[in-house]
Length: 205
Image (cartoon, rainbow, N blue to C red; front, side):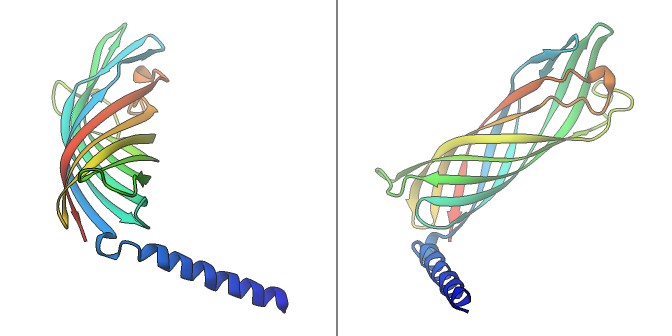
């Protein structure tokens, strides 16, 4: 019975502390951001295939929940369109695709801003979904939609314009396996890296 009482007390204490932490910054607990992005992928090769992805741009929309003034959780969705160029012994095999990104990350922010600037770092995981457009000149017969798991890391800085409005500059890096669209002819087995710089606005409430 004593063990049950102690366990109950522990649960209550943890709940109270968690609630107190969440109330540290009640006005600015939630945030939504919209950013324009670049999308630059490193060339790779494997199994006799040299691979290049065209540079492009897109957007990312994020929701961030602040547990306190230094720790937050981030959920983001992004979209771009590019062409995966595969140079094989049989010739060039190009696949144009819509690329959807869905990620989750933990964010650590310096607790106190410096001249209205608040730097942060982030790390997490997610998925990149490569969906062929089927457009002529950028399609290989049999190419299918493919999802690749990705590790995401990065950092950025927010600039406070007013109480609920911020400007954001951010960098995210993605590490993932090169898509082959479920075609043996495009399978290199290579791991690649995409750099995604971005800038936009943040609303906190």
